[in-house]
Length: 411
Ligand code: AMP
Image (cartoon, protein in one colour):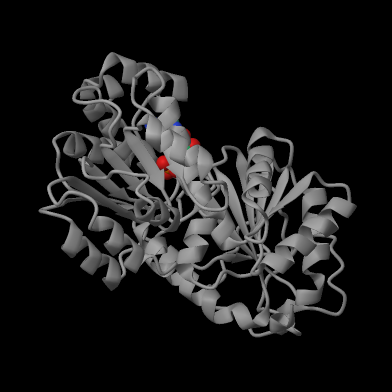
């Protein structure tokens, strides 16, 4: 199938060309005809699949007819970065149409948002909290909403947004088209889907499994050597953009400072920064001012930067879901990427959980020429069935179990 087959308005086709899309991704191919036909949708899609355009293009098509300057599409997303990205997608794809989009999220002044809402906007892309503020202040009229999208539903629920979403739903007409997208399908997402969707079509692209275009590697390392190992890897490896995940805001900040001192072009993205600083870090990374972004899970949610060659889990994620989301930042839209995970002894249970979802063991590697000091993972109990292939970029000369992890919770 190609985009022409869907008979989008010529102004939208111009937007598709501007975005550089030539062939629909699998989720777009499955979802767009159903969404265009007005069906409710449950989209089980991991990050990087092209789901934003899968719902945005049909929304823009709908907006080519009917009244202007009233809000007819509402998209709710869990984080500011994701809301901003969806808004940018709407802006690019809809540039030749008359539809407008406004991004509504906290951490920035309300004034420009109120002004955009007053001028009239057909699309609102919002985070729940700030949208409720505007609803309470009477700044926004959702009584004409025809399409409601809840994006990254699982994360929204993880972040405790369910009560906010229920409150927002009271301001949106019951008669509407509703789409719920989620990478995973825990039971609370099922019940949310049951309560808000009517006879939904379900489209599924690789549920719960990380992107197939990403290769995975595990580096057993003691906690105390992690920073040195990262530095050695960056020295040895051909990378384009590298996204590094840490467990806490403090660790993100500190690691970014350390890398900065070593002369890397690096920024931190973590929740303690002002919205302006976060945006500056994101934009700088996207535009190539920074080669490395050190981020926490929440801050990095939904980051969409092409050419991320490596995702490094400097700290193991807390859930398999978080692993899926993190490494979904590389290997996007069919490009290939590498997911590198530093693992200490306490991470063993999580490693097994991740391997279960991947359906295969993750390759254990040691970085050639790196001074592991006294640490010798070969002498530790090996994890089950490590694979043995050699990597093109991070070379390996051994494999084995995970090292002890002094003071993991101390930082
Ligand atoms: P998403 O899953 O919506 O965050 O999209 C992931 C990435 O794929 C973004 O960089 C999109 O711009 C890109 N993308 C979406 N649809 C297409 C397409 N049909 N062809 C090429 N790239 C696409």
